[in-house]
Length: 351
Image (tube, rainbow, N blue to C red; front, side):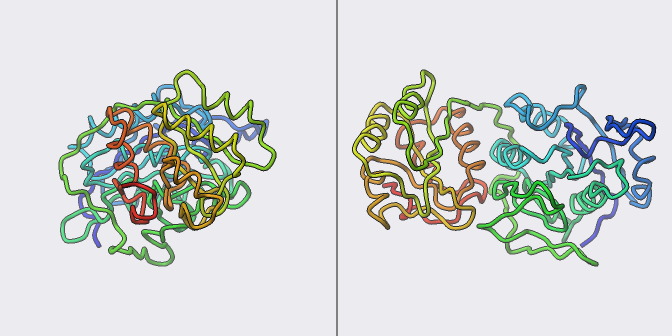
C-alpha cells in the first residue's frame, strides 16, 4: 500500500466536525475551513496535496435533502479527473443516508469517496474529529498495484471503514457511532491500516457517470402493535406515493389481520412498489418463513434481504429517478447494484 503523489479533495458539507469552542463563552461556532491546517497541523506531514471545498452555507445533517446529495455528486464530478480521492465531511445523523445515496448516484466509480465526521467538534480537546479526518485522508490516498485500494463510497468512523450503503448510526453517546451489522468492515485501523481486499466493491464500468435523477415519492411505514388503520391508509393513499418501505418485525413479519393485508395488496395492485425491510439491525428478511409474512409474499411485497432502511429508501429514490417501474424496478431492487445486498433473490419474493 502506498500514498505517493496523491491529491485529495475534502468536501465540507457541515456538521459537528466543523465546529470549535469559543474560549470566552463556551459556545460552539463554525470555524473557517480555509484555515484547517491551523486546527489540524498534523496534515502537514502528509506528502501529498490536500484541497478543500466547503458548501457556501454549511448545513446540519438533519437538513440534508436531495439537493444536498446532488451538490456533493456535482463537486465530485467536476473535480473527478483532478483528484485521486475524496473525503466528505458530513454530520453523523444522516450520514448513512447520504453515503447510500451517493453510492447509487456515482455509477462507474473507481476512486474512493470516504464519508466521515465526528461526535465531538474538531475544536474540542477530546475530539474524535482529528483522527477520523486524518485516517480518512490516508485511506483515500492509499493505492495498491497502482490503483486506489478503495473504489467505492465508504464511511470511516472510530477505527473502522464500512461500505457506505451498509451502515447505520446506532450510537449517539460513544465515538463508535456507526455499525455495519450485515457486512463486515472494509478496513480496521490500529497501529496499521488492515484492508480486507476481498470485501472491496469494484464496478464493471470504469468511467464515472453521475446519475442525478432521484425521485422522493417514497414512504416508510414502521410496523408496530396496535397500529391505527386510518393512519396506515392515509400513508398508502398519499397522493405522490410510488414506493413504500415496510419496516417489519424479525425476518419480515407483519400483522395478519385482514384490513392490513388487504390494504397492502390493494396498494400493490394500484402500482405502488412495497418492499420489506426488517426492524432488526442484523439478519435478513425471508418472506414465507413464518405465516406472519406469507400474506405479504402473496400480495407481491418485495423482500429487502439484508438491506438497511437507509439503503432501501435511497435505492428506491434512485431507481424511480431513472424511470424504472413495474417488474423491472422490482427485479433491480432485488439485485445488488453497489454491494448493498447479499441475500440471493430467491429469498426476496421476486420472480
